[in-house]
Image 1 (tube, rainbow, N blue to C red):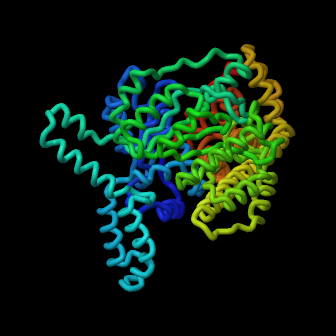
Image 2 (image 1 turned 180 degrees about the vertical axis):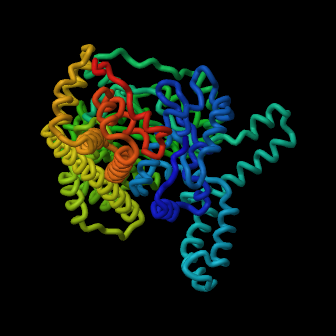
Length: 579
């Protein structure tokens, strides 16, 4: 099932922040990326773990890349819809968290840049903006066109590097003339442009927000579970040689990548066959030695260091087993190596209940030293996730963040500030959800109190308790007395359906509960008036007195009056012993 119906404004904001050629798909991971998980499962990205392409060693990487599951996933990804397994990014897009949207990371692998450039010129010519004035439209688009064109030619932008793809396509064309048919078929495979590896959970830390699935130390010491099975071997490295040779970019996650032996085999393969491809390594910063230094110097590494605080106490509270001073020494060594290669390392931070006050200071340091900054969204554990704070607590964080003055004189600062603004947008979305839930819970508490004071509700509750306990026949004397006390059958019938409505409304928990509650009330009132106008009141009272009340409540929670084939569907005789 696809994820669709995104807010038009959010879609526009998303596409406005993307390269022109990337806008044909909401995400290019299915077409250009492979993610290898710790359990041997292979998917299009690390967040879609339900629509797997296959599993190693049951299938080889090439079989999975060209298989039916991969083809189906590519068909489901459009410019307005995401496949069902893409709920993480769908939620981010719905919340307006554009800068933090994982799908955007795959835009630089998008295909057909020249076609997109032509389309952009057509857009200028036809004036698909506020007017059709060619001069004005060109002025509106000129800066982005110039920048994108330069980026594509030089291969430095977020879009497809034209120089590199032209070289690759030319190589394939020449190869097709003199290689054997089998070799030609192998060489002309459109290999993924990005490869993501998360092959092991080997890790020396027990981070507060982490789980044994991602850390062997947590699995052993905190969860008291046996080690996870290792699925990848030297044969896997051999099966990946052509993938690594054709990759534009690779990404290595952990555990801790610098403690995972098979990663060094993959890195050595890249040193031999594709040393210029980007190699993203996300490290906790605790490991630095001669082997690590060789990888950083021999490969085109983009180093991402996970740091959630620059305060020793907070850092060590989050990154359990880490030594803050040692990590800072390694951090400075990483900075020196990266700067010697003309690069800046990137910081990855998890905003959470333990460090939210320090996020502005982390942003300030990154802006000062031109470090790109990325915020990871933390959903679990619940007690650390900002998502599960109250609306009042979230508003406190939002107000604090909005009071921060931002500097944006460099490109890195502008990108970091956009990340920070998207974090605020995410918090505002969570605040609104929390407020809606709080209103619902308050309404439920009030409704529960009202029901508990309702004599008929209590009588029906006692009857249902007998039914649940298997008592037969059920004692309905209290109900008979209540019916007699109301005097008029019409009054009792209205009270009965009022209790039915309140019982259903009590358990409505969806975000749009207010609209659904209103529709429910209208439906039950319509049904009630229809029964009173078309059926004998005394006969209705008799039906109610022997009715299975839970059945009627459940039915009316699922169908409207208009959906009932007959009002006879309302009644199901309970074992009351009443004739």
